[in-house]
Length: 299
Image (cartoon, rainbow, N blue to C red):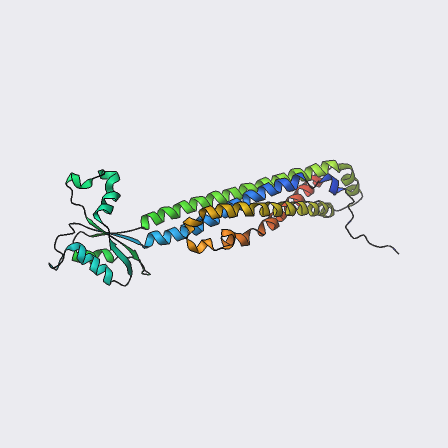
């Protein structure tokens, strides 16, 4: 009684033609780069969201002639504005900045001692906006108490952070596309090399009636195995590097991010296992196209 072999027979000798060294190493290197690109895109998005929220919530109120009487004529302008901010439910932690702090802020433009120029420095109050809508009505309300009062938010910086994030994500997407194209090219070269080494065998069985799909399936199965193994190794090797980079960036992400697994964004931990699957898909598709195209060009 004949028994079937446990492993599928390698009639084409692909284990020798498509070795298990060079191709997996190249795919592992590209998987490593792809993991870094994905981490950069996700980390920049996470940091930008946090920075945008903090920047938008920051308020800076400038009160000209802070010691002049306010609109009610009873209290100085700075005190009246500060009291009004403390009474507003959507304004948190309003604090008057000391003259020394104000001088330190404007010293890059006016020198180390702006008061020596004889300029009347405005009073400055810092606060946080906790409302669900933008503080558009805050400026006119405070101007009624102290004419000329300016309310500035971090919307400008938030917009710049958003633009920077978009640029970084675009660069990461470009890197991923380039890595995928290079991986496909490497697989195509490896497949054609295997076809060249087994040309006589492949030509013979093709002349005997073997279908294109059967031959392509043999090559694609071997390539899929090698690319999956290489990409899995690259993703595993990228983990300690990503953890180290995330630990360096943890102070910028805030306390909530420090407790995450390996200091990595959860989305990245979900995306990393998908790298070998994507690499295997690229390997399978490229091998199929390469073998079928090679067979069609046979005389």
